[in-house]
Length: 180
Image (tube, rainbow, N blue to C red; front, side):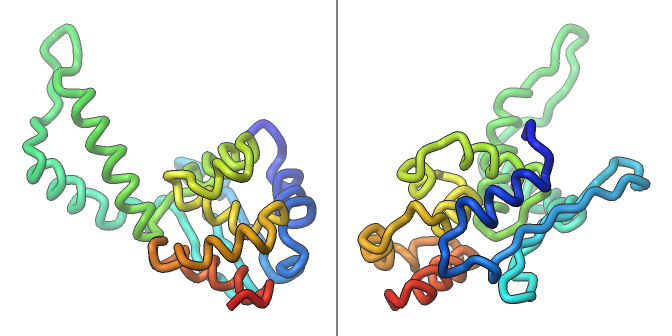
């Protein structure tokens, strides 16, 4: 993201957030400068309560177990250096992207995944964002003011198809607009 977080947050919370949720939904990001890797934390807050959060520690907790299980099930060979290149790197990278998608659908993500989703959202049209493969992009889209009541009426039948954590935000918007 080229812009400052405060500028992006203002755009998300004031310019793009639907009127029914203004003042109720807030985005929070912090970076821990004294941490060895300058890790950070992201949270989405509704009515003063943290609904979902992401950070590197939560993201990597359990990651290795999931990675080991998935790679074993898919028969992915380990990476190794043959003196010229890393062998099996591409297939491992594809598996790791798949694991990231699984974790994201479980509501487990790191700050970089959220900022990446924000950037994708801000650079896509709203129709693309509503059907994005990335549930964080869909979250940003469902609370966007450009999504009107007719579109929300159509989307109310898709709530149960969303990851469990994302269903909260679909219901929040639908209730705020008196659709459900």
